[in-house]
Length: 98
Figure 1: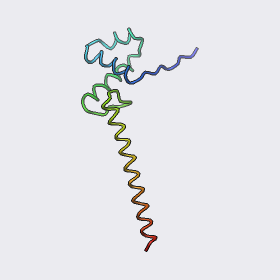
Figure 2: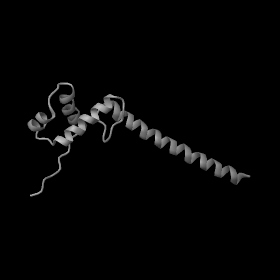
Figure 3: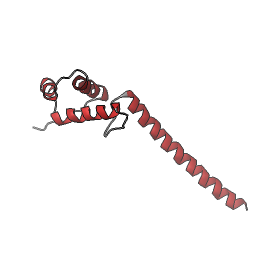
Figure 4: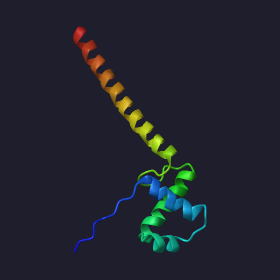
């Protein structure tokens, strides 16, 4: 019998972490009630606390702000690569015209 790995969406993780951080419920109690692994819940709490502190945190973002920041950073990287390619192409064609 194999155990399937459960996956949780960011909203669920955020709700669980908020119960611990904001409501003061203990990690062990939440894990027991919701049948979750304590290590996973502790990671979610650490992620939330780092995001609330303005840091990106490790792993997938939980808050909407951090999700948006990661999307904008990826878009920014893509645009920088596009500009770099265009610069190289224009330099190449400028050499050919001489």
